[in-house]
Image (cartoon, one colour):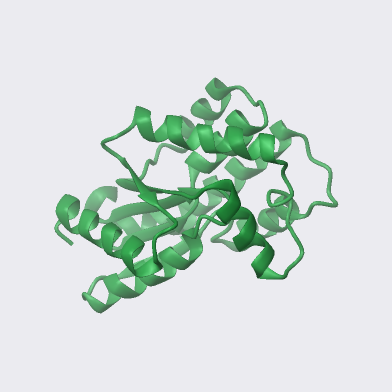
Length: 208
């Protein structure tokens, strides 16, 4: 079987966009429809990648933007080889909360790493999603949702408004450049509406 026997779906967006909640609901819907679904996340998905995630999210560990970029791709290389490709090869639907678009938006657009460097590392991984849902919410909604979590902020949740604005611009630029892959979704809508829209797109584009 080829790697494309399955369907690779990613959810992207800034902090508080609702990706994790939507990924959980979408996973449930697809499983109820009889599909094998692998729900995973980045950074993470394997023991090694989860260890890298802990390092990346820890705001007390100082890391340059390039160091963060390389760590994200180290985690991604392990995740893709050990988890995502095998699942796709057996025909599963893979739903991943964040993927390479987040590295491009955060580290390149947001933090100044060269876009060409991130693009080169993305090509090296050599696996792009079939469908990417870009969830968008205004800054006010993002702040409100982050404040409501009541937990300590991680490295990326502590970024200032100017950086977050550049990250949002990055996601919009990615979506505009790849309309065949990326679908922009209004993350302020109720989760049932958001996931319903995603389900409709998946059915239209893949027949699943």
